Length: 81
Length: 396
Image 1 (spheres, rainbow over the protein chains, first blue to last red):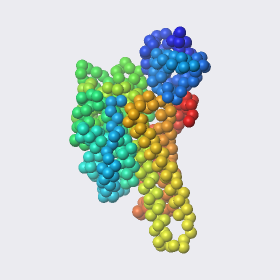
Image 2: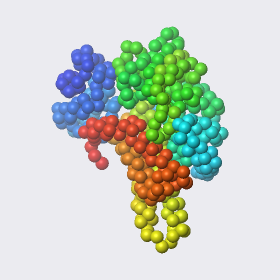
Image 3: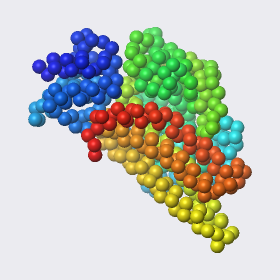
Image 4: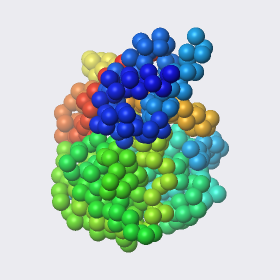
């Protein structure tokens, strides 16, 4: 479920050069055109949607590097809540 | 990361080394600094003196023939060198930044182990070709690409700036991984002077850091694919190149600032000797600038120690966070601004003697070097970056 939602959020906020449907869960999002500014929008949307707060220690390039890595972080934080 | 090299050498050994560094500073670097600056020439005698002290391999582990300094010790060496000749210190720092990339990200690999042994034993000088015509200063994008053919490759890059490109023995070139890769899928490639040609495209006649000879070149190179550092450039940049650059640059700028305050102090003392009843304005200004220098020093030292801590824990997660990037960017912005402030205040103290080019209190070179600090990787670019990253920062 999380994967589908993350994909929707990414489609809306990622400003990628490719459509999210063409990306595998482990595709590199930076290679797909994810910029640091788009990462901001993506992060805010994820926090809103899942009602989480991503801590500083997880806010790094790696977290946003693929759909899978985003899902991992989201699941880790929603399980905690 | 493959290796973090943070044990360093003993305090006693390091103090001894630092003494030697100050000795070549006084005997070789300072006497030549003015000529290097006036003629925008490579500081050959200073680099030779650095090689004699085996400092080219300062950050290379001892088991590979290097001196085995850790990052804070390396930063102190840059700070010491900066007190004598800004250009020499900058060349030294830029060389060590590339060494750090190879040490931190190449050591699991036999080729890079042997390569670093050669750098230490033959004192090979490493330069970097990161910026590219058509892209400018954005390190995370390349136009040029590695063109692989079997086990070998060719790589051509139009670089507007390669500091001491003519004098270097090896070039570290950023490039796209393949001709089909997107602009930000980059690798860091090491090519040796035996395997590249440099066609000069732009001269280096600048306000400061004139001795770095940072001319532009079209680089045409070839090599074996094992010369490509195995780690993605994105990792090399965030974990090594970005923090090491700003810590070492900040350190040598601190050295320049320190020398200007030392000159101001000597000037005030001289004045006191000549005229003990003169008003104390200059002394008051010295007290002021001294506190600013301390601010700069503590910031540079603090960031170096923080980075060393993360390296020694091999804490890759923390190195990759946005908050660490923000901190390192802040170091760059603060130290490149403070160097101008400190040298300007020192100039007010030394007055016309500092303004002249022909006195022992001349601050012309210091001031011109100081203005380069905020422009090499432009502070506005860094500030914009932080403005974005701070949206994702939770605060202290």
